[in-house]
Figure (cartoon, helix red, strand yellow):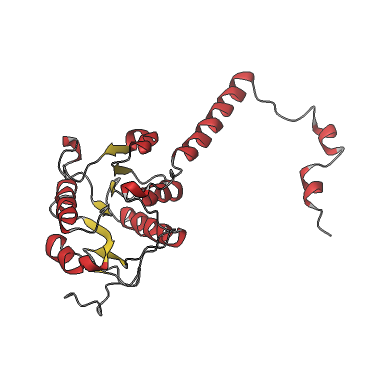
Length: 233
C-alpha cells in the first residue's frame, strides 16, 4: 500500500540516520539560494493582473481565450529566427499569460494604465490618441504584434493601425487583432486582417461580439480563417 501524504513528507528515523552524511549548504550558498527563490516569487507576482477599470474600457480575457492566444504567440515566436519580440498593445491579459507560460519569449506591454508600470522595463506607456509617440527603438522591432483597441470606434482602430505600422516591420510580421465583429470590413481595409473561427471571450461577459483577426491563416489552429464571415479570403 502506498504511504499517505503525511508519511511521504516526514519519515521518522530516516533523517536521523543520515544527518551526519547529508551535504550542507554554506551560509553564502544558502543566502544566494534564498535570494534566488525570493526573486522568482517576486517575478511571478509582477505579472499578476490588476483589477479591471471599466472607465479605461478594460475587460480581461477569460482563461480559455488567454491560454489560446498565448499558445499561438509562443508558437509563432518559436518559428522565427533569434529572439522574436512580441508587442502586446492594450492587451495585458495576453502579456501576463505569455510571461507565465513562455517566459523566454521577449514581450512588451503598451498600455495607458500606469498601474502596469509594475512590469518594469516590459511596460511602455501608450496613448492611442498619439499612436506613434513611442521610443524610437521600438520602430519595426516587433515581428509579432497583438492589438486590442480599447474602443470600437473607427477613429480608435485607425490610430491603433498606425501604432501597428510603427511597431511591425513592413514585411514578415504576424498581426493578431482583437476587436468587435462590427469592425470586420474596416480591419481588412486598414490592416489586411481576416476573422478566425476562434471567438475570444472575456471574464465579464460583454454585449458586443468579439472576433480575432489575423494577417495569416492559422490553418488548423484558432479555427483557421472563417470563410463564412463575409470578408474575402
